[in-house]
Amino acid sequence: MLLMLISYLDRGNIGFAATQGMTEDINLRGTEPNTAVSLFYIFYILAEFPTSIVVKRLQFNRVIPTITFCWGTVCMCTGFVNNFGGLVTTRIFLGFFEGCLFPSMTLFLCNWLELGIRVAYLFIASALSGAFGGLIALGVLYMDGVNGCPGWRWLYVIEGLITIVWAFACIVLVPKNYETAYFLNEEDKKIMHLRAERAEAYSGGNGHVTKADIKEAAKNVKSWIHGCIQIAVVTILYGFGTFLPIIIRYGFQYSTQQAQYLVVPVNLWGAFVYAIGAYFSDRYQARFLPMIICAPIGIAGYAILIAPVSAGVWYFATYLISTACFLCTGSNITWLSVNNAPDGKRAASIGILLTLTNIGGVVSGQIYYSGAAPRYILGHAWSLGCLAFAWCGWWVVRAIYSRRGKGKDRKLAEGYMRSEGTMYTDREPDFRYQI
Image (cartoon, rainbow, N blue to C red):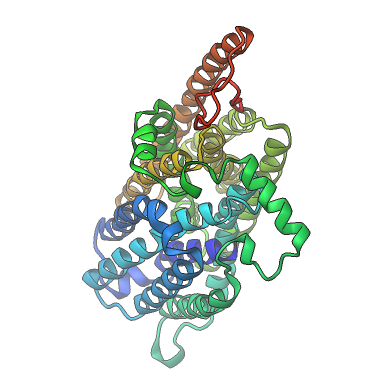
């Protein structure tokens, strides 16, 4: 989770840097900051699907430290850019290297924790990065002028150095798999092995993704419906996470210092809600209910931001949005993953989902542009519409799973028996969809 937290810190610090004068110092004009944000996600997209396919073959203990070192170096270099071209170059490389991390971590943790909990950890890291990012940015604000450098440059350099140090630590800390984990005893390893068998992690070529897996995932309507929903909720997540400091600073008319620390409790609240939701979702295998409850709360938050009310009420609305955006984004991934088997098809489906996911990141970089300040009506209205679309989409997904589940029940009632040696997939009647 710490790796994901650092990753979100390094990609999201552009919002904090903008409130500390980066835009003026390197002469960014019009929508150039938004273009830099969107380019990050374009190259993030290009990296994710190939990574989800090959990372197991390349081994996690090699891939994770390498990509962490690379993006830490790029983040540190961002502190030395002097124009739009330099910023774009660093954002492109940052997007590519960070794009390799999320699928690597998702697949790496597949036998360590129950699925909802492990995906929750990754998205809780997103929320915590907003909180820690605000605290770090607030501290770095007092370094403004040290050695003749503005505070935002120190922000990139310090966070980049932290990432590089952690990359070297990962060489020692990240095991090849749970079987070689030095911090697990034999009893723990047995539990991991049983979990792997239960999750069908060793079916379909020891978790390796085949062409047949990719074909099955691509033909599966679940992959595309969940993927379209994910575009919508990620637009909200990345727009909220990246631009919240700017919205508070210029939209709510708070000072730079206030904007840095006011993001902290909002993100902590989002992390808390998601942790509770993920726990109960896994415990009761109820994937639909948490999202269908929280999404309307987020919709209400965006409606308040659009309304002509006081800054205090607008700030309250950010807590409502935080209630929805982290939980809905992570839970949608979990819902698709638990309803796919074998492991190769699951990995391919998640690869498709993650590729579609960051289309939302590209969009989020464009809806909160400087010309819309201080109200940012377009961004809030677009986000409201995305959350409403996702809410409707989950009802459709639920109907599909329910219909297929009834069809499986009929086959079992008719005495269906799976043939010996047949590959176990989610289409088998004895595979139960989690709803």
